[in-house]
Length: 120
Image (tube, rainbow, N blue to C red; front, side, top):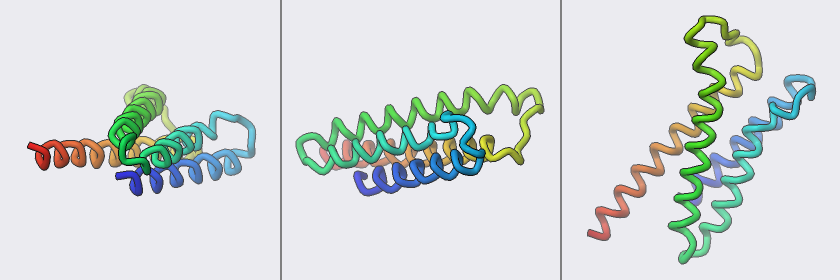
């Protein structure tokens, strides 16, 4: 799971940088995916240590959950009202962030369940 965490983190970091540059460097909020990405890469690095892996991966799931909640809370009202412009780079970056983090969270939950069954 640490490898997946690192790859998702790198993907989010790249997404944040591309979003920031793609939006003309007008707002630092375009870097939000990169902040989540850096946190995940850091937790993957901590997770290399066998004794800290469980805690690091649980913390990574919390980061993913916070990222999903925060990003989706910006998307859902606009989608519900029908006022969201899907052509804007910031909106596309938010959608990619939510989808990537939701996939990662699902994969993490499955990994935790499999590990629990293996120990039982």
